[in-house]
Amino acid sequence: QVHLVESGGGSIQAGGSLTLSCAASEDTFKNYAVGWFRQAPGKEREYIGAIAWSADITYYVRSVRGRFTISRDNSKNTVYLQMNSLKPDDTAVYYCAARYKLILINNPDDDWSQGYWGQGTQVTVSS
Image 1 (cartoon, rainbow, N blue to C red):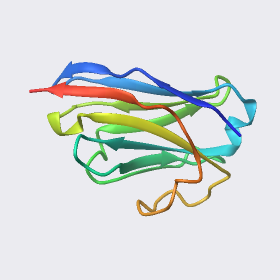
Image 2: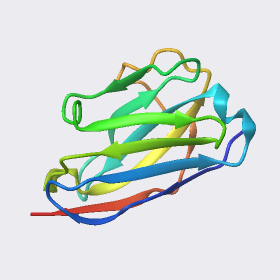
Image 3: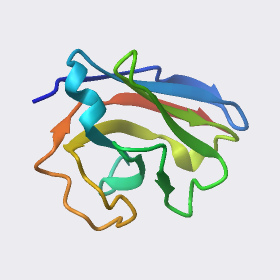
């Protein structure tokens, strides 16, 4: 079991950058793949990408590919979501989720509901 805390959200103008953090207090965090999700008002939660547990393998959905970067620092039990060239459409509550030793991270329709989730952090991008 891991307990996740997201941070780093805020308000920013279009074109700007933000880095979100997903931190765990457990050293076993290194054994978890971590996915990032977002949910905009009135919309369903959207999977935007993930990083594998066993290597620095990442996956991004098309809407964020080339703008967002996921990385991890296992010495700090933290996964990061670097967001560049932000757009108003990126406005949402962002969540991270962890799944134990998940191998395949490139399926946006995969069920992460049984993973461990953080509380979310709000990102607001103004035009």
